[in-house]
Image (tube, rainbow, N blue to C red):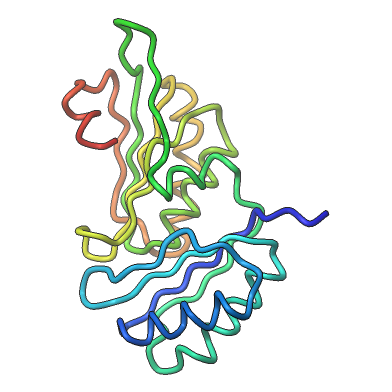
Length: 189
């Protein structure tokens, strides 16, 4: 049985082409739509999930149908299952009564794909919780990854995650916040 742990990220410079590409991809490839919406600067973002071969098919369809409007097409294979809820905004932060979050790591990237790659890399490196992967909307097409956990785990995760984004030239910045104030944490989840 083939696992549905690959992501396809399709970024287009045209909204009408975005709807057209989304329709063709969903009709022709065995993938699940996670995100499909217009984003900042008049672009359109589609994120699909499926088996690697199916996601590659979706990307090929997007390339063909999207034509002039294609900005970026990315396949990320073997994504950790903890990343999916953070992309779709369905994660829950659970803390013991009276206990705060020991630390929070925030990574900001210049692209949607690099934010998702950073989240995947970090969660595979250390025991942490991905609270949010905020992509494109109201952040100028950027991505923001918010993770919580103990300081040692977040420090261990930060190095490879940040390095992977730097290698793509997409790192806007990052910060490790120890004992984040509850208002700051609430703003980010």
